Length: 510
Picture 1: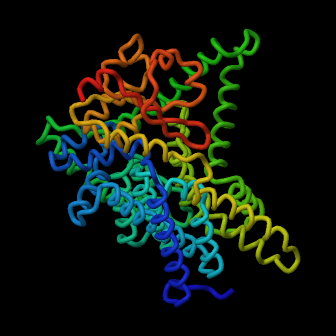
Picture 2: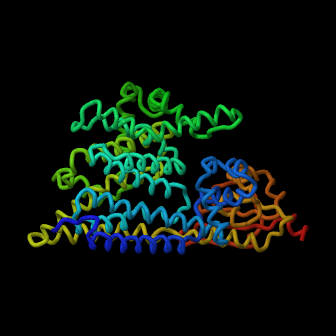
Picture 3: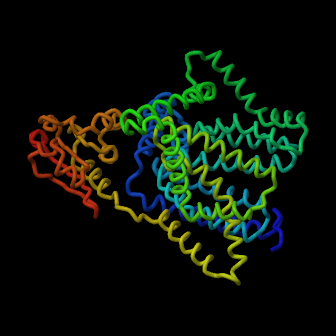
């Protein structure tokens, strides 16, 4: 296999083709989405509120407190006059395109082999969780794009023995852009420069200068923010305040969270004889929980190929590149493990940045298997088949349809007049009813508990729209109070239903 340079014609062809398929996947994701994810409601309504001012839009709902993504949706809608939802999917497709291309550029910078570059395209285009989240309108898409871009420039920077100011500057700009989407970008901006002290090629003085070079833009931004705070003391920096608190007190909070959970485990779960080992048991539980979450996020086949590449030492990354990549991996682990211990919860998309970094080893494992094709064909065929199965599950909806939610919301939008009142225990139903506007966030939280309409309180609403399953219908006492036949029922193949009741008060008003 001949080496591939940036000026080689073969360099661009796989990237262009992969970019095309990434756009196709993003278009498909937008096309097949019937119901937007709950977080999307916040971003879309926040974008729609931008005309009232940034302050109003950023305080509309919790996710909007980091308003750059909503601002981009608003700006694209004003520019193109398409819907806010269409603008969001266009932005997501653009960010996913950047992620796919940058992932390939990173792999190419590590090997310059055309076949490995093509395999890198296959790996990220079949990435189960990465494709699965294309349907979601979340600001993470922008974070992943600029996160990978920062990794690319970090690798270029250390490859040139920390000599190029442009690479250091582009690395910092990339992470500042990533921070506009998720606060984790600032964590990488602050922690990663310390990695340069592990580079044995340089004397300590050169490492210190490299450290300062990486922090130059951060220092200027910090001075600018400090000056702005001094002249605008009434303004808040939002989650940047949280970042400073975590950097100063994060480890103490981490230990306290762990101790609280261990005490709860010893007191309420373990027996008298095992309670003394609660700390060790909890530690093993967290490690197991975290490993299972990472493997699930990667997919078992990608996890197996990564371990295979590690055991066989297939990638052959230069030492300085390994330091950068493992630095990014360890910072990811620090962020996500801290969140898991603190919140006892870890959404799949929080691990995608880590997964994309670990996936850099997968093309090299596949390349090694392909080299042995003439000796053994079955490993390549088996791995290829499993990858296609997992890849397809991220591209096509194999679960139960949520179309019934959209149908229920559209029915309410058509039949309920602006003067009539609606109750629903489902956030998405409220959104598609087009009845609540910005009040959806306060009413949505209040309505989630069905006890809100217990003891006949459901009669005060003109329409009661409930998203329930068969178990709810049998066991929930509040549902048994409603002695009316639904005027509309929508359901999926699993038996999940939206049942819409028109109360007597609703009929009287009509």
